Image: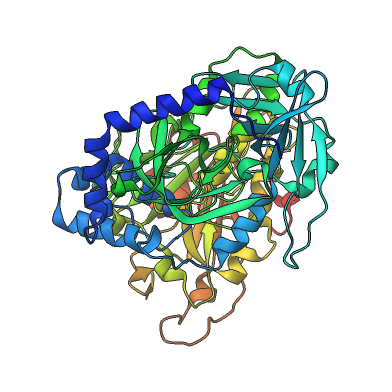
Length: 613
């Protein structure tokens, strides 16, 4: 075995030791808080604690967010709630769901042993690296300090024992710095392409780098998958706990052998939170075990990479690296959500529907809003306005660009509450348990999934998995392949649609007579208004209505849902305005049915060809 410590590695360890010494007092205070019942909610900054809880909600739909302001103010109820959540999920014992093991098997497959070689092909040392995209490998700068060293070196996957105790087959691939190489001495990372085909690397998968905050706070346990000293792959389980969060680094205590250079550091959800790079002997510091480990925070690595000038081909590879996972996990940093664009359709402005004074008084307030109206919740490519008493959307509004739309695969659903709205003003998981109700998307999953790159489209896809964007719908209503589901597609792809763009406003009819179920009045009807620009430059707006009244009739009293027929109708836009008390402005005049004398004269839609545009 070859195990060589470079001068640069020694420098990194010395710098880590200095940072550890500087923060001894702060670290000891945090460790003392972690020993208190519920103290995990006090050991990190309030905003970080609240963001961590919000991110955990993507994995645990039953979680309710806790107000950062309430945590910052030390509100007893908020602190108790935050402590209970974090103690249950982050945990103070070693009990974990078995899904943790399944996730570990998948995550560890992408971790390999780096053979560090010189120009003569001689082995001079080992490190650890992880695939973080279909093409790119992440390790330390002191493992691969430059493109030349990377060009001589090799990544080896599968160097481990199987469940039978016998060695697994290994696969080794050269690295390809000519295709991509980026590194930084101070952040101690190197990112390099692997010289292999997609089919060759696909069996190992990859662990995405996620720039969002909330992946780890003080008190979280982390897991290190590693090739310590170049030996077979090993896992440090429950022996590492975050004890300090610096601007660029995480510190985590351990009583085990330090992880090897370049190892990915995972949270309990198997998200990479840091790149391990240094371990400091901690004799005489029992408060954080025998060693203090240091890793570079993933968010800082991604920020550095975003700022680098790259050729288009390299930028495309980097965009694949930064994509969020296709699992509906939602970025808890809402500051970059631009929402619905009224000027999206070429040559026309289509504002959000107007609320009557009565409706405006019932709209839930976006607690992070910086402008008016404060009741709008912006997401990627769409917006939502909530009814605070009904706890459902008054309406949603989405822009759809058929030219750059992407057909993203649907993975396991992870629905989340929106922390910008009070938990008492939105319906969560509780209404959907043990019954035939579906979480019915109002903005369809793929409607906002468009953009110049897949990561941009993925953000729109993921944002549709907010509870604010769904309404209880009987499974037969939601899942049946009806013309309702294809209306946006038909209008979008109509030959007379200029620029292949549409804007769609959708919502439930919130009638006073809707029947209650588990404290929620279930809407019987849903509506949508679809706007496009014809090839002659004129605006066209069409409205549609669909009822599930027979499907939910008698739900409260009966053990099973009743089933009945339902139909899709094209109706005048003004009919939707009457039903909802919303105003649609110029869209009413742009309606091809506007000339009908009576709103009772409606057009049943049996096939898409029945639509009047």
